Image (cartoon, rainbow, N blue to C red; front, side, top):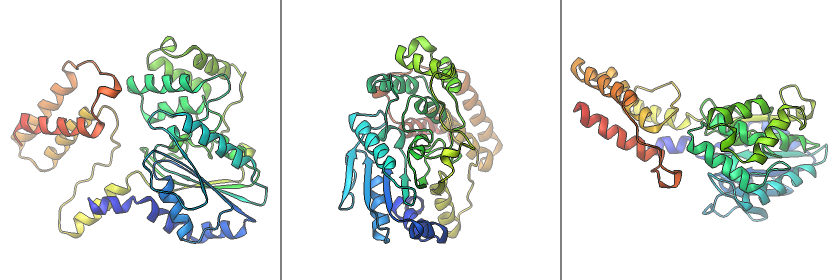
Length: 348
Protein backbone atom coordinates (compact mmCIF):
# COMPACT_ATOMS: atom_id res chain seq x y z
CA UNK A 1 0.00 0.00 0.00
CA UNK A 2 2.79 2.44 0.88
CA UNK A 3 4.48 1.75 -2.46
CA UNK A 4 1.18 2.36 -4.29
CA UNK A 5 0.63 5.68 -2.53
CA UNK A 6 4.23 6.79 -3.06
CA UNK A 7 3.91 6.11 -6.79
CA UNK A 8 1.08 8.62 -7.13
CA UNK A 9 2.30 11.26 -4.68
CA UNK A 10 1.39 14.45 -6.57
CA UNK A 11 4.16 16.48 -4.96
CA UNK A 12 6.85 13.96 -5.87
CA UNK A 13 5.51 13.73 -9.42
CA UNK A 14 5.72 17.51 -9.84
CA UNK A 15 9.22 17.66 -8.36
CA UNK A 16 10.42 15.06 -10.84
CA UNK A 17 8.69 16.80 -13.74
CA UNK A 18 9.96 20.34 -13.23
CA UNK A 19 13.60 19.27 -13.49
CA UNK A 20 13.07 17.46 -16.79
CA UNK A 21 15.20 19.33 -19.38
CA UNK A 22 12.37 20.25 -21.74
CA UNK A 23 10.13 21.47 -18.91
CA UNK A 24 12.93 23.35 -17.16
CA UNK A 25 13.76 25.03 -20.47
CA UNK A 26 10.17 26.26 -20.81
CA UNK A 27 10.52 28.00 -17.45
CA UNK A 28 13.89 29.51 -18.34
CA UNK A 29 12.71 30.81 -21.72
CA UNK A 30 9.67 32.60 -20.29
CA UNK A 31 9.79 36.27 -19.30
CA UNK A 32 7.51 35.33 -16.38
CA UNK A 33 5.69 32.25 -15.10
CA UNK A 34 2.11 32.26 -13.84
CA UNK A 35 0.67 29.16 -12.15
CA UNK A 36 -2.86 27.82 -11.84
CA UNK A 37 -3.47 24.61 -9.87
CA UNK A 38 -6.87 22.94 -9.80
CA UNK A 39 -7.84 19.65 -8.20
CA UNK A 40 -7.69 17.71 -4.97
CA UNK A 41 -3.88 17.94 -4.96
CA UNK A 42 -3.69 21.62 -5.96
CA UNK A 43 -1.95 22.89 -2.81
CA UNK A 44 0.52 19.98 -2.77
CA UNK A 45 1.44 20.54 -6.42
CA UNK A 46 1.91 24.27 -5.86
CA UNK A 47 4.16 23.61 -2.87
CA UNK A 48 6.25 21.17 -4.91
CA UNK A 49 6.73 23.79 -7.64
CA UNK A 50 7.89 26.42 -5.20
CA UNK A 51 10.16 24.03 -3.28
CA UNK A 52 11.98 23.09 -6.47
CA UNK A 53 12.74 26.62 -7.51
CA UNK A 54 9.91 27.56 -9.86
CA UNK A 55 9.60 31.33 -9.46
CA UNK A 56 6.05 32.37 -10.19
CA UNK A 57 4.83 35.92 -10.62
CA UNK A 58 1.30 34.85 -9.71
CA UNK A 59 -0.12 31.65 -8.20
CA UNK A 60 -3.76 30.61 -8.06
CA UNK A 61 -5.02 27.47 -6.38
CA UNK A 62 -8.48 25.87 -6.47
CA UNK A 63 -9.00 22.85 -4.25
CA UNK A 64 -11.38 21.19 -1.81
CA UNK A 65 -12.05 22.10 1.79
CA UNK A 66 -9.44 20.63 4.09
CA UNK A 67 -6.56 21.03 1.64
CA UNK A 68 -3.10 21.66 3.12
CA UNK A 69 -2.13 25.31 3.30
CA UNK A 70 -0.80 26.48 -0.08
CA UNK A 71 2.51 28.33 -0.44
CA UNK A 72 2.70 31.93 0.71
CA UNK A 73 1.48 34.35 -1.92
CA UNK A 74 -1.08 31.96 -3.40
CA UNK A 75 -4.57 33.23 -4.16
CA UNK A 76 -6.66 30.31 -2.89
CA UNK A 77 -10.26 29.37 -3.66
CA UNK A 78 -12.13 26.48 -2.04
CA UNK A 79 -14.35 24.71 -4.54
CA UNK A 80 -16.82 21.83 -4.32
CA UNK A 81 -16.65 18.18 -5.32
CA UNK A 82 -18.34 16.18 -6.83
CA UNK A 83 -20.72 19.08 -7.41
CA UNK A 84 -19.38 22.59 -8.12
CA UNK A 85 -20.09 25.42 -5.69
CA UNK A 86 -19.89 29.19 -5.80
CA UNK A 87 -16.27 28.78 -4.72
CA UNK A 88 -15.67 26.66 -7.81
CA UNK A 89 -17.12 29.44 -9.95
CA UNK A 90 -15.13 32.19 -8.23
CA UNK A 91 -11.91 30.23 -8.68
CA UNK A 92 -12.62 29.46 -12.32
CA UNK A 93 -13.46 33.09 -13.06
CA UNK A 94 -10.15 34.17 -11.52
CA UNK A 95 -8.30 31.46 -13.48
CA UNK A 96 -9.76 32.73 -16.73
CA UNK A 97 -8.83 36.30 -15.83
CA UNK A 98 -5.29 35.27 -14.90
CA UNK A 99 -4.87 33.43 -18.21
CA UNK A 100 -6.18 36.46 -20.07
CA UNK A 101 -3.46 38.60 -18.49
CA UNK A 102 -0.53 36.40 -19.56
CA UNK A 103 1.59 38.16 -22.19
CA UNK A 104 2.89 36.57 -25.38
CA UNK A 105 6.42 36.08 -23.97
CA UNK A 106 5.21 34.57 -20.67
CA UNK A 107 4.26 31.05 -19.59
CA UNK A 108 1.08 29.81 -17.94
CA UNK A 109 1.76 26.63 -15.96
CA UNK A 110 -1.40 24.64 -15.22
CA UNK A 111 -1.30 21.87 -12.61
CA UNK A 112 -4.26 19.47 -12.73
CA UNK A 113 -5.31 16.64 -10.45
CA UNK A 114 -8.41 14.63 -9.65
CA UNK A 115 -11.65 16.50 -9.10
CA UNK A 116 -10.62 19.46 -11.25
CA UNK A 117 -13.81 19.40 -13.30
CA UNK A 118 -16.02 20.25 -10.34
CA UNK A 119 -13.52 22.31 -8.37
CA UNK A 120 -12.89 24.72 -11.27
CA UNK A 121 -16.27 25.33 -12.86
CA UNK A 122 -17.58 28.33 -14.82
CA UNK A 123 -21.01 27.84 -16.41
CA UNK A 124 -21.43 29.09 -19.96
CA UNK A 125 -23.64 32.07 -20.71
CA UNK A 126 -27.31 31.23 -20.24
CA UNK A 127 -26.68 28.38 -17.78
CA UNK A 128 -26.73 28.94 -14.02
CA UNK A 129 -24.60 27.14 -11.46
CA UNK A 130 -27.73 25.53 -10.03
CA UNK A 131 -28.72 24.21 -13.46
CA UNK A 132 -25.24 22.81 -13.99
CA UNK A 133 -25.35 21.19 -10.53
CA UNK A 134 -28.71 19.61 -11.34
CA UNK A 135 -27.35 18.28 -14.61
CA UNK A 136 -24.25 16.73 -13.05
CA UNK A 137 -26.32 15.23 -10.22
CA UNK A 138 -28.78 13.71 -12.67
CA UNK A 139 -25.97 12.24 -14.78
CA UNK A 140 -24.29 10.75 -11.73
CA UNK A 141 -27.52 9.18 -10.54
CA UNK A 142 -28.11 7.78 -14.03
CA UNK A 143 -24.71 6.06 -13.98
CA UNK A 144 -22.86 8.26 -16.47
CA UNK A 145 -19.14 7.50 -16.71
CA UNK A 146 -16.44 10.16 -16.52
CA UNK A 147 -16.22 10.54 -20.30
CA UNK A 148 -19.96 11.19 -20.55
CA UNK A 149 -19.91 13.55 -17.58
CA UNK A 150 -17.08 15.61 -18.99
CA UNK A 151 -18.51 15.72 -22.51
CA UNK A 152 -21.56 17.48 -21.08
CA UNK A 153 -19.57 19.59 -18.62
CA UNK A 154 -17.30 20.95 -21.37
CA UNK A 155 -20.23 22.13 -23.43
CA UNK A 156 -21.88 23.86 -20.48
CA UNK A 157 -18.63 25.62 -19.56
CA UNK A 158 -16.71 28.79 -20.36
CA UNK A 159 -13.36 27.33 -19.23
CA UNK A 160 -13.25 23.60 -19.98
CA UNK A 161 -12.47 21.86 -23.26
CA UNK A 162 -9.42 23.97 -24.16
CA UNK A 163 -11.03 27.31 -23.36
CA UNK A 164 -8.61 28.22 -20.56
CA UNK A 165 -5.68 27.94 -22.97
CA UNK A 166 -7.41 29.94 -25.71
CA UNK A 167 -7.71 32.85 -23.26
CA UNK A 168 -3.91 32.94 -22.90
CA UNK A 169 -1.73 34.97 -25.29
CA UNK A 170 1.44 33.23 -24.07
CA UNK A 171 2.37 29.57 -24.02
CA UNK A 172 0.66 27.12 -21.70
CA UNK A 173 2.25 24.06 -20.11
CA UNK A 174 -0.01 21.61 -18.32
CA UNK A 175 1.24 18.94 -15.90
CA UNK A 176 -1.54 16.51 -15.04
CA UNK A 177 -1.99 13.73 -12.51
CA UNK A 178 -4.56 11.46 -14.09
CA UNK A 179 -7.63 10.06 -12.37
CA UNK A 180 -9.32 8.75 -15.53
CA UNK A 181 -9.11 5.45 -17.37
CA UNK A 182 -6.72 5.75 -20.30
CA UNK A 183 -5.11 9.02 -19.10
CA UNK A 184 -6.96 11.05 -21.75
CA UNK A 185 -5.85 14.67 -21.30
CA UNK A 186 -9.12 15.91 -22.78
CA UNK A 187 -10.96 14.19 -19.91
CA UNK A 188 -8.67 15.01 -16.97
CA UNK A 189 -10.37 18.02 -15.31
CA UNK A 190 -12.38 18.25 -18.56
CA UNK A 191 -9.27 19.28 -20.50
CA UNK A 192 -9.15 23.07 -19.94
CA UNK A 193 -5.92 23.46 -21.94
CA UNK A 194 -6.11 20.75 -24.62
CA UNK A 195 -8.17 20.11 -27.77
CA UNK A 196 -11.63 18.69 -27.23
CA UNK A 197 -12.67 15.79 -29.49
CA UNK A 198 -16.29 15.95 -28.31
CA UNK A 199 -19.07 18.15 -29.67
CA UNK A 200 -22.39 19.66 -28.69
CA UNK A 201 -24.05 16.80 -30.56
CA UNK A 202 -22.11 14.31 -28.43
CA UNK A 203 -23.33 16.06 -25.28
CA UNK A 204 -26.93 15.87 -26.47
CA UNK A 205 -26.45 12.14 -27.13
CA UNK A 206 -25.32 11.67 -23.51
CA UNK A 207 -28.52 13.33 -22.28
CA UNK A 208 -30.55 11.05 -24.52
CA UNK A 209 -28.84 7.96 -23.08
CA UNK A 210 -29.09 9.12 -19.48
CA UNK A 211 -32.76 9.87 -19.05
CA UNK A 212 -33.68 11.97 -22.08
CA UNK A 213 -33.75 15.74 -22.52
CA UNK A 214 -36.89 16.11 -20.39
CA UNK A 215 -34.90 14.96 -17.34
CA UNK A 216 -32.56 17.97 -17.53
CA UNK A 217 -33.02 21.72 -16.99
CA UNK A 218 -34.50 23.49 -20.03
CA UNK A 219 -31.63 26.02 -20.11
CA UNK A 220 -29.12 23.18 -20.40
CA UNK A 221 -31.03 21.58 -23.26
CA UNK A 222 -31.32 24.96 -25.03
CA UNK A 223 -27.57 25.54 -24.67
CA UNK A 224 -26.68 22.15 -26.14
CA UNK A 225 -29.28 22.29 -28.89
CA UNK A 226 -28.17 25.79 -29.85
CA UNK A 227 -24.54 24.72 -29.98
CA UNK A 228 -25.36 21.71 -32.13
CA UNK A 229 -27.22 24.06 -34.49
CA UNK A 230 -24.20 26.38 -34.73
CA UNK A 231 -25.51 29.15 -32.49
CA UNK A 232 -22.58 28.78 -30.06
CA UNK A 233 -18.92 28.28 -30.85
CA UNK A 234 -17.62 24.74 -30.48
CA UNK A 235 -14.81 24.01 -28.05
CA UNK A 236 -11.42 24.07 -29.85
CA UNK A 237 -10.56 20.78 -31.52
CA UNK A 238 -7.26 19.34 -32.74
CA UNK A 239 -5.52 21.70 -35.16
CA UNK A 240 -7.17 24.84 -33.80
CA UNK A 241 -4.58 27.62 -34.09
CA UNK A 242 -5.60 29.06 -30.73
CA UNK A 243 -3.96 26.05 -29.08
CA UNK A 244 -0.71 26.21 -31.05
CA UNK A 245 1.21 27.30 -27.95
CA UNK A 246 -0.31 24.72 -25.61
CA UNK A 247 1.59 21.67 -24.36
CA UNK A 248 0.28 19.09 -21.90
CA UNK A 249 1.92 16.11 -20.20
CA UNK A 250 0.56 13.38 -17.92
CA UNK A 251 3.12 13.19 -15.12
CA UNK A 252 1.15 10.65 -13.07
CA UNK A 253 -0.74 7.95 -14.99
CA UNK A 254 -3.99 6.56 -13.64
CA UNK A 255 -2.40 3.13 -13.20
CA UNK A 256 0.58 4.54 -11.31
CA UNK A 257 -0.56 3.13 -7.96
CA UNK A 258 -1.08 -0.32 -9.47
CA UNK A 259 2.38 -0.28 -11.03
CA UNK A 260 3.96 0.89 -7.78
CA UNK A 261 2.28 -1.88 -5.80
CA UNK A 262 3.20 -4.48 -8.41
CA UNK A 263 6.88 -3.54 -8.35
CA UNK A 264 6.99 -3.64 -4.56
CA UNK A 265 5.24 -7.02 -4.44
CA UNK A 266 7.52 -8.56 -7.07
CA UNK A 267 10.58 -7.31 -5.19
CA UNK A 268 9.31 -9.23 -2.14
CA UNK A 269 8.93 -12.47 -4.08
CA UNK A 270 5.19 -12.45 -4.70
CA UNK A 271 3.64 -13.78 -7.88
CA UNK A 272 1.57 -10.83 -9.13
CA UNK A 273 -1.41 -10.89 -11.47
CA UNK A 274 -2.44 -7.45 -12.74
CA UNK A 275 -5.79 -6.83 -14.42
CA UNK A 276 -4.84 -4.72 -17.45
CA UNK A 277 -8.37 -4.03 -18.68
CA UNK A 278 -10.00 -0.80 -17.47
CA UNK A 279 -12.30 -1.15 -14.47
CA UNK A 280 -15.52 0.66 -15.35
CA UNK A 281 -19.22 0.47 -14.58
CA UNK A 282 -21.05 -0.37 -11.35
CA UNK A 283 -18.60 -1.08 -8.52
CA UNK A 284 -20.45 -4.19 -7.33
CA UNK A 285 -20.27 -5.82 -10.77
CA UNK A 286 -16.61 -4.94 -11.19
CA UNK A 287 -15.80 -6.44 -7.78
CA UNK A 288 -17.47 -9.77 -8.59
CA UNK A 289 -15.58 -9.83 -11.89
CA UNK A 290 -12.32 -9.35 -9.97
CA UNK A 291 -13.09 -12.38 -7.80
CA UNK A 292 -13.74 -14.39 -10.96
CA UNK A 293 -10.43 -13.27 -12.48
CA UNK A 294 -8.55 -14.25 -9.34
CA UNK A 295 -10.25 -17.64 -9.30
CA UNK A 296 -9.37 -18.30 -12.94
CA UNK A 297 -5.74 -17.47 -12.19
CA UNK A 298 -5.16 -19.54 -9.04
CA UNK A 299 -8.22 -21.54 -7.89
CA UNK A 300 -8.94 -25.23 -8.55
CA UNK A 301 -11.59 -26.09 -11.19
CA UNK A 302 -14.47 -26.62 -8.76
CA UNK A 303 -13.98 -23.16 -7.22
CA UNK A 304 -13.69 -21.53 -10.65
CA UNK A 305 -17.02 -23.09 -11.65
CA UNK A 306 -18.75 -21.72 -8.54
CA UNK A 307 -17.28 -18.27 -9.12
CA UNK A 308 -18.45 -18.16 -12.73
CA UNK A 309 -21.94 -19.24 -11.66
CA UNK A 310 -22.05 -16.52 -8.99
CA UNK A 311 -20.90 -13.91 -11.47
CA UNK A 312 -23.55 -14.94 -14.01
CA UNK A 313 -26.24 -14.80 -11.33
CA UNK A 314 -25.10 -11.34 -10.24
CA UNK A 315 -25.17 -10.08 -13.82
CA UNK A 316 -28.61 -11.48 -14.67
CA UNK A 317 -30.44 -11.27 -11.37
CA UNK A 318 -32.75 -8.45 -10.25
CA UNK A 319 -31.10 -5.30 -8.94
CA UNK A 320 -32.44 -3.01 -6.25
CA UNK A 321 -33.41 0.49 -7.34
CA UNK A 322 -30.47 2.89 -7.16
CA UNK A 323 -30.92 5.12 -4.09
CA UNK A 324 -30.15 8.84 -4.15
CA UNK A 325 -26.41 9.50 -4.37
CA UNK A 326 -26.23 10.98 -0.88
CA UNK A 327 -27.68 7.76 0.57
CA UNK A 328 -25.35 5.38 -1.26
CA UNK A 329 -22.07 4.05 0.15
CA UNK A 330 -18.91 4.89 -1.78
CA UNK A 331 -17.75 2.85 -4.77
CA UNK A 332 -14.94 1.36 -2.70
CA UNK A 333 -17.38 0.29 0.02
CA UNK A 334 -19.80 -1.24 -2.49
CA UNK A 335 -16.93 -3.10 -4.15
CA UNK A 336 -15.66 -4.41 -0.80
CA UNK A 337 -19.11 -5.68 0.16
CA UNK A 338 -19.48 -7.38 -3.21
CA UNK A 339 -16.09 -9.10 -2.95
CA UNK A 340 -16.94 -10.39 0.53
CA UNK A 341 -20.33 -11.64 -0.64
CA UNK A 342 -18.84 -13.33 -3.70
CA UNK A 343 -16.17 -15.09 -1.65
CA UNK A 344 -18.77 -16.31 0.82
CA UNK A 345 -20.96 -17.54 -2.01
CA UNK A 346 -18.22 -19.71 -3.53
CA UNK A 347 -16.41 -20.44 -0.24
CA UNK A 348 -12.99 -19.30 -1.42
